[in-house]
Amino acid sequence: MLNLDLYIKSNRYSIVRLHREKPDGIVALLMRESGEKFILRMYDHYVFGYDAVKDIHIDELPKIYKCESTNNSLIVEEEFIDGLSLSDLLEVYHPDVSQSAAIADKILNALDALHKKGVIHRDIKPENVLITSSGRIVLIDLDASSVFDPQKSRDTHLMGTAGYAAPEQFGFGRSDARTDLFSLGVLLNVCLTGGHPSISLARNELTPIIEKCIEVNADKRYLSALELKKDLKKHIGPTQTCSVCGSVTHGGGCLCCARTSPYKRNPHRKLYSILAALTFLAIICIFIFAGQKDEKFPALSAQVSPSPTVNKTQTAVLETSQITALPDIEQTAAPEATALLYSQDDISDSKPIRTYFEKFNKNILYEGGELLFLGETDSAPKPFIYDIDGDNIFEEYYFGVLGNTQEVPKHVFIDSAEAPSDSFERLYRTYAPAVFTKNAQGEYIPAQELSSVISKPTVELYYIGLDYGASESTMPFMYLTLPLYDTWDGAALIEYHIGCTGAWAIECKATINGKTYTSYSITHIK
Image (tube, rainbow, N blue to C red; front, side, top):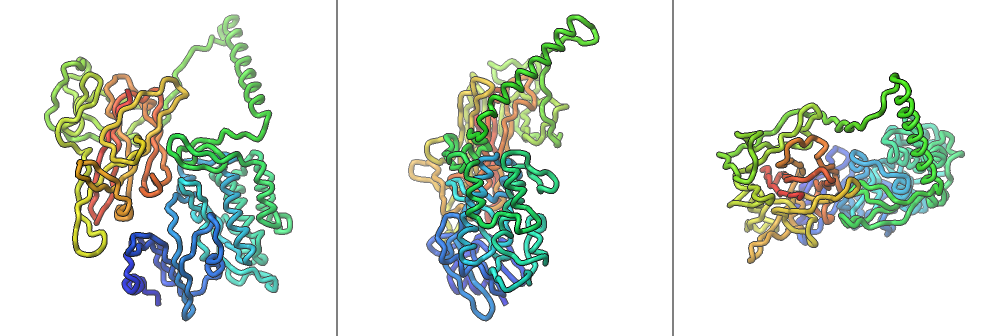
């Protein structure tokens, strides 16, 4: 019988997070006394792949620190990869051709190493691929793995994930290297389209590769990971380091900032775009000319594009004390204005944003176009006590907002920046809930050793603008990103455009010791 508590106590470990607990297996994130985090896997049966992986040392597979089997059970201590799963990434962004090919290429490095050891992974899917901001792409979870046996005509244990598993994993043959390549072909299609190839097959230069991977007849598929890598290589652009968030993306662009790669393999693509644009302009000219001759075709007039529709329509009202009017702000349109707090999810295209603002959470004011802090505010980090080393000595820490708006990671109290100057320019800021210590100078310093104590971290964006006539089109874009500085989960990247002038509140929440903490940061886009 698996006993996680006994194992933790006997090794003087502490538990950070329980990922999975079933009668036949437990997966948990633990921490050593040194503060190092690692993944513990406990099974009541032998798992083929982990013994093989412990001798493989490549970036695309996690390091195995310990692999012990006793009485038909297995205990594995594995490297903790602090990254975002590919499945989480696909919820907010679909990599382009170059980025998707690069992701598949890295997974193939892992598969090639496993296949040379005779191990078939058998569960290639987005949930089992982790991506870090430093550019590592790691294949995890060997629970379904098996050893290739040429003497068997079919698999004896039917395992795998529906939709990704090859036909032979359901009793129609024997798993081998081509089985994993089938699943990788499905994964590649999901990266590009968000759907299974049977529903929405990708229509681009990777289509022939995907179709060959997912052949029902294994003999028609790629024979090896190296053969598939050779075909993918010609579609992968150079690796780039993002100038905004600093993350590394193979294939170019930035997965963290949801930016596509500038690399285009088709040399005629730009020409096709120009020809398409000229054709479109010609059609418009024909309609305009026809409208001058015949009233049935009225001349085209400039129209404002409708703003995207957002599902939620409720307005969140921030409680305030008595509001003091500012002498230099014209109030004719709202003589009794109240402070309103709008979430990006709370805006609908049928209801314009109310943008008059005088006071945020009692103590933050506009004056002469600038934001001022008056006294203590909710933007100050929230104190809490925590015993980090288990010696029953509790020390004071603070929960607040960490941002990459500075050259070094630090608590963001207030941030101001120039608005983008044209419709194509963008301004980026990344924020995450974080824990801080306080030094002798009163500065808040990120306490990375306490990154594991927070759970359910979230970031929300709210508008506190001054200008009337704004609409939901003023809202910046917000993306889920990789952990900020490789440590802080729940991070969000906010992309400001030319219409985002005004003040914005970044609300960070997280749970610590069962209590939910909230802290704010204010960004003023001038």
